[in-house]
Image (cartoon, rainbow, N blue to C red; front, side, top):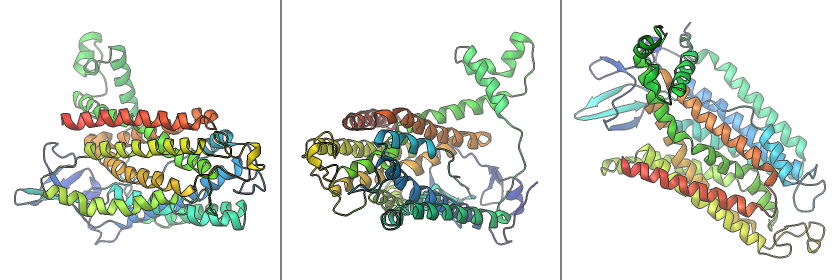
Length: 455
């Protein structure tokens, strides 16, 4: 049953509510949401419905709670109580801290609202009105991530209990916003579950030597005289969806790299001369970079390139972002090598006799970490909006949610891989870890560059 509390002037007519998978042309004719692949569309911003803002605000407060919790959690588990340079409590070391942080923070994922409006014709140019883009979601996520800044100072001045109280309060705010805005959400009619059919199709495909055409209804009826619940059109949609999902595999390693900013780079900062700067403060530069970069790309860079006849397609943007990710992780590896080559403890920072019981870090300034977060933030600004748009646009109408879910599944696999590697997340192996990740990302960048050139 469909319910909505949006006002009459929300820009969504009743027919669009009943069938959100259809759109309207300039003369009023309805068309399917999946648009021709060979047409170039100029995206212009449309009005964002209140429901989208409420979901985005909920996500903002959820991320506020997450990021204000995860940095102090790493310190709480890794560092010992009354550490002279960084806050701590349990003193279990970096490997166990990373393991527990990965385990304790992988219980959920944010919602990703993405709605499209109508498109109309203006001369020979089609304009696609986008009501809510991934930009809205990603901006809210990164604004919420700025909670690291107050969290680091509260952690030092009042203790871990105050940080945890702030994180818990933010979760209650997120829940309150979501519950209060429930009347504005649109609840489409429940569609039949396609997963059983999809599972049967994939099972037949694998048994037939990865030949998906063997799962066509006419083929099955011809060979085993059995009728199936799906159609040939469904097989074509599955093929299209699987092709769209192929590009998601590299995100396993991308997330593995991104997660370093919440664990190992926080520990890396603790091995340097912090000059009074909290070791878990600098990751906020990543969020600031994303917040500043994404509007510039969306409002200035991409429109200018489009008017100049340069089509900066999602795959191109992702390839460029992967290149920046490679550069950022390679810089992190170089910085770790610099730390290992610096006195007084070289490859065992704050663990040798010369450190005066851990009071003296290696002689490298924590400010050398700034390029790490700036470069990785630039990478995110290119990769994530493009990946969400690609997943949405390439997937058939009936499989859009499933394809987006597979993208999130790849994120989860990357986190699990980090969980598996956490036992080796300690000195003196971190240089090898960063160098290996940089090498993998370099190969991924080359592969994506080849895909872009083929296009």
